[in-house]
Image 1 (tube, one colour):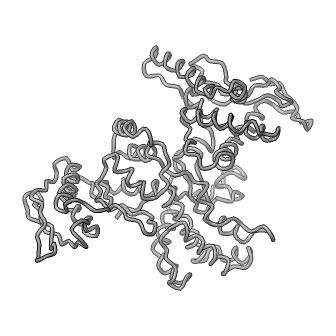
Image 2: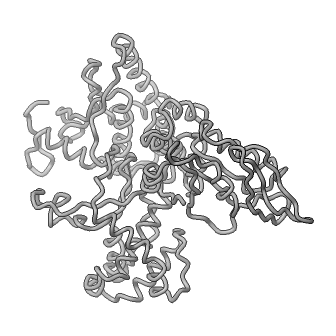
Image 3: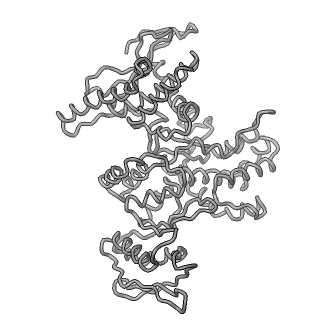
Length: 507
């Protein structure tokens, strides 16, 4: 990169480094524009090379009707995505080519890992080429070229792999170290929830964390506060703090976000996180640090914005904030389980290969997350629909549970004992000792899901032998739906991480 400067149309001389920084700062906006506005609800948007075929097809289909302004908007947004995908293949970083293009002072380029010795790739030129040839294969051919170079070097240098430079606000980051204040705040708010709901809604409101309950929360905020000034004066009151926690919990439990907190840091640069001027300093917020292009929300700010709308321009519905958060995937769930030591990375790779068709599809419903966890073999589940044989079903569940204990617990001789026409108890021998658990069935086709956690709990090893135990997975439930019962086998520390990162509750 040279020190040459160019004018941006306003007479301002711009250094290539500044132009590159402007581009990289705008990448999150361009990617969100593509994903949420230009091509909304796209299951393809996962930063994998295979997704480029879908994107190229959409560009070819739509480009004929573009105005000059449309073309510039689509090209910038698509270039951001194409570039990030290519960097994922060949490593390297964004750069800037200083040669003027169509009156612009150069353009962004992807510079593959230096070890490859490849020339930079200009995503905008690649897009123009794809639209010109119209084959639908231009992006895929570029991916294949880069993969060939990566494969050749990896063969020459065993263990070598391309390294991608971090793209701020796009690539995953490590969570902020948990501050003691955040732990106290969330614990206090959780404990105060029943009283908060009773006082705020006269006991009539069902605080079940369903996204639609945010409509009720929005209404009560508007009823309680007529102005922003009134809201600001009450921001530290229990009701507002409870409302902030509830909003954050709805996001956390439905989208797999986690609570974050940046304490005041007097040494922080003005305007940066931790400084007094930064609006998110010293205020709990929810974020998705482990995901690409993560969502983030400042609950206090979201509630305040309800009262800031200009006349004739009402604020967006509160539940719309969920739209900006990225649902987890099987691949993401597997990565979390491997990171906290519940499964090996090799096992995750095996499972993802087995379910490759949907391994990266979004898990839109909260109930799909524990189901994904079960795919990696970290727990057991009880079928929520009808079963062929109750006794066989309970036997199968207990066999799967004891298999996870690696021989620490054995359960044999499982049988249902009748009392007249009804089942009275489930009997079995745990390490040779007879155990009875009361069960109740509405019919001879449906398991007793109330008793399943107690039954499976008998497969818990002795604490001195194994620190793991079976914990029921709780999640946000929709109306009129039949759900499985999921139990995950985890230590206390693993359970805490699963709750923080995946948005589930373990009991």
